[in-house]
Length: 424
Image 1: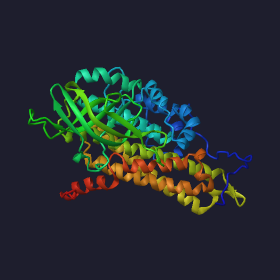
Image 2 (image 1 turned 135 degrees about the vertical axis):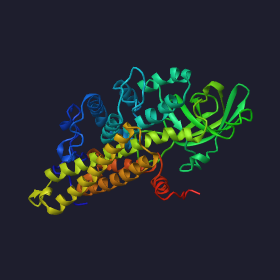
Image 3 (image 1 turned 60 degrees about the horizontal axis):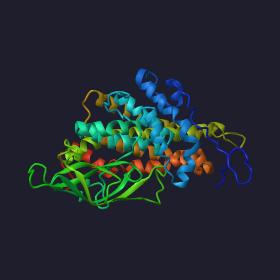
């Protein structure tokens, strides 16, 4: 590596070459300067959407001073969930009485901005609000909503969404975890893997195949169950060795005859189609999250190119650097257009699952491309956590896979345009 930080640092220390985001930004021009909003797509944002966007940016003051150390040590700063709750950013576009009401555009901007700050923080909202809270709000009983909605939306308690299993990721419809009816209880057995907030939290929304011969329409179907993490038979182990989203923990969960009451089943979850309603709603959020990561990487590359002096001139004076920056901006702008259109379709109630799938595929692919370019343009500085790019680059790898892999989402799109399923 020949490209070193622009200013020599004392032995044993390093010095960041990329500035942190300004946490006090409140106007569209401050939040997303023209250099990163080439078509001025977000310069007219106002009202509740702008307030939520600025609130998300304010979290940079809490996150950026600690996140690189947390990421490097694989430590989960769970207090940030409470901070997100204080800012009313855990609603994720859900209709929760007494809390921030957001349009799809507003929810997307929050998702984008949090991921622009840090991917683990963006995932906290995706897990707590997008998945756990959404399951209860969309599919829960009035009593379940009364018990769990407020603690989850305020971040007073932590929720998990336990669907993926060791042997069932993309084919989660084939899950093997069972919930057997036993008198006035459900007895749940099985394993779950890659579950955010699955360890050290309060409640897991566990998806299981029902065994209940007394209910012909439910027997054999997939349903959701509210499982408190302190119940006997619930054990969870943090997954170690991750090189992506290291500042949030995922768990491997074992459910060994965990007994919950009949009232703990989500009554609105009577088949995997109901599970898919929750997943579909979060898929577009991944496209927005990828946009946030890509924006951070592009801005870092632009800043470095205009301030780094090599051979007596800024890197930005080189034609090939300008071409690369223009290419990155073109890709970023296409991502922005995708997100804005998806938000419009969702607002109009016309969004289709395959449209969200295409947005997820295209934006995570594009984010990978921008991150790789930015890492290269920063030279040796690009692999230092303090300059943020490599953290975003690694975290994008998780987005590329979760909420439906690139291949599976592409097959959903392929099925929609050919009329033929390639899944079976």
